[in-house]
Image 1 (cartoon, rainbow over the protein chains, first blue to last red):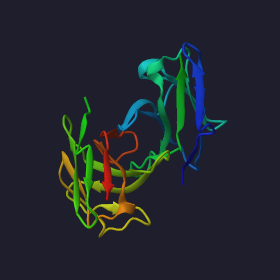
Image 2 (cartoon, helix red, strand yellow):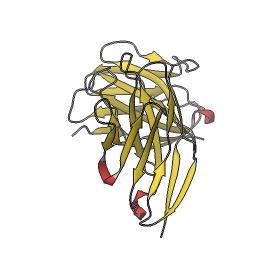
Image 3 (cartoon, each protein chain N blue to C red):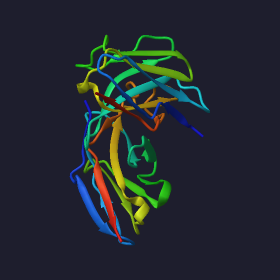
Length: 114
Length: 117
């Protein structure tokens, strides 16, 4: 079974500063990895995904993430955040060989401070 | 592309009422749709997975008779909360995927805020 740990429930950061949101997973098989963003009272929007290939994945809104198999991590980064990046961010995994079920972390609330 | 529409966005109703929530994939065919429940400041909890033309697969602890799921076409799935009670109040989110394979991302609707008085 897969599980996801997002170590930080809340991350405050000043505008234009860099940010890293941490995600670690556990799985006995290879995984697909995803980052989603949720704005208040809305559903989830896919930021980026890792399926295979290059371990550095670039997504929308200037975000990127790096898959590190040895550390079982998939941290999300952005070099310079904007006020509009304030939202809840969810890391998720799925099993490539099984049903398309996503297992979500508990989320990280990113707050960008002006 | 890959737009998912969820309707209604908000429902307020009396205890004992049944409420239907629709999830539509607008520009693609969704073989598989998922229904999640999200509690305040919590992650998403998968309730059930539905494949077009088949019975839904419910997660452990989710009452099948309480949360009726229908996936009659490749673009529409519905969740009916039967005889809703205040404890059913929550944010319900659907997602749709082109297939049941793990490499196909899920595309999410904007959610439905259900409030039972």
